[in-house]
Image (cartoon, rainbow, N blue to C red; front, side, top):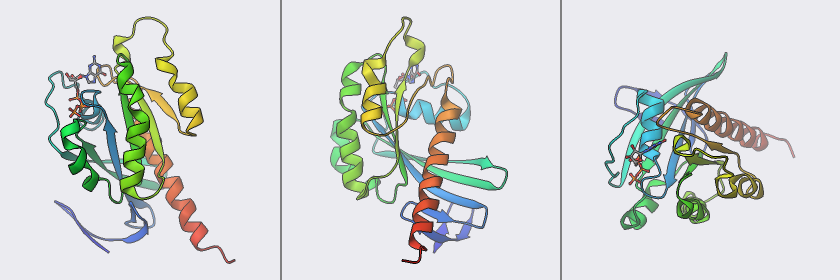
Length: 204
Ligand code: GTP
């Protein structure tokens, strides 16, 4: 398969939908970031990739793409193409076309707004429907810097356990847990891809 990027042309082997092997030590995966409008999706990605907090709110129109690389161990390098999907309802129909080939999903809510937490099942359902199979996802409660008292974040721990998904509480403003978040999704999608690859090669 030929992947034409802005600066590179790769000859790569498809290892499963949403993942490509660039060499014996480098892989590329697509990860979608979803959640209600203004929960901090773009801010979280910008904090990780560009290293600063964007204070203003410019609502995403449709979709934006970002690219990031990381090493998950001495020998394994990942390139993650992050798709930042608009949270506004007006983009619901259009959003469906952006999920294809994703290897993982970050489902975000705002820890100060219960209604954004209640929307999570809807986001999981939308992503699963359009990706066409269940892919790994992480539940992300963002804006932890705005919570001053002890909080159970609307019971996210129980919900995540019931969905067999990890969760993280983050702040794009302070940077809390942002590195952990992107490393975790990288490790999870790579592990899943390697498992499904070795399953396919099992002799029955
Ligand atoms: P849509 O593109 O409309 O789907 O929104 P979004 O989820 O991408 O939200 P965005 O990143 O644009 O952030 C919305 C607002 O929340 C902005 O004013 C951000 O500065 C603010 N914000 C994002 N993350 C944090 C955070 O961790 N803490 C605080 N205090 N504010 C945040």
